[in-house]
Image 1 (cartoon, rainbow, N blue to C red):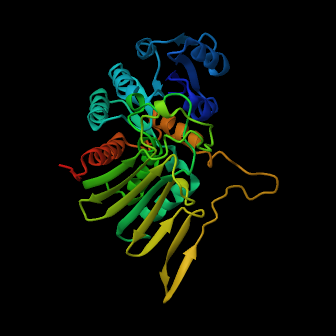
Image 2: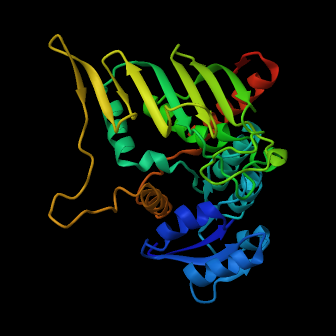
Length: 359
């Protein structure tokens, strides 16, 4: 399989900011289909990134009937499952952006569709491909930390509410910072722990700052009347083996401790965090230590290779290689399903005030 054909469904910010710039760098990948509800967006993307004669449409059903190997689903969250399942049933491999879906039932249906089709389904958790994440994962696999029994998943912004598109719509997105950026931090943490068996979850969501008419927001003021999702959310997850995970997420919070897609791991042999670069901590020969690995590539004057350090490009390369049968996908849909199940449980617990137990 020397070359592949791909189509894009959804041509908003994530398509232009992450996927399209990476996909055009992959030899042998031809972008031949572009779909968006706004026709002009599809036309502009096809002109800039597409092959000559690339098809343009506003109907994803036309995309899944195209002669393509891959469909990238980059739409609002509430459309992820419907489009991904249709593409899988049509015999296409699918990379769907995070979060996997707005409910665990939809996410499970996506996993089932992938199994029935025999095609590859992956979810856009590109933070796994960062140099610090890859290094930390390697240490986890080597047993550096022993039994990881406590962890934090951090996705905290002080004032960075996305005010474009449909981010503030609960109907289209399924939630606010918890499902938007908290999902990245939780995915990283579960992946490092290699623990996907949750026992229970409790959570709280808040709408405390969303009504502020002068928010000092990084992306400008929002309309409080359309801010229907939470501005911050917090959860506690207990795993079957007793390990505990705390999840913190916010778009707007009065705090100075900020950071996104970060994890803190505490194990019986050592610990790690991403609060000031990647730091490993522990005890050796009766003394405490802190170790900061040098993760920059390159090493020659005037030369710095960024090919391995761009997580979006690394993610794109891994998925294409997996479709070609040359690699295994780093992100497995069964893992993303557990992330969705936990997020859903935190939202449910926030509504009821009660813990949610997993079967």
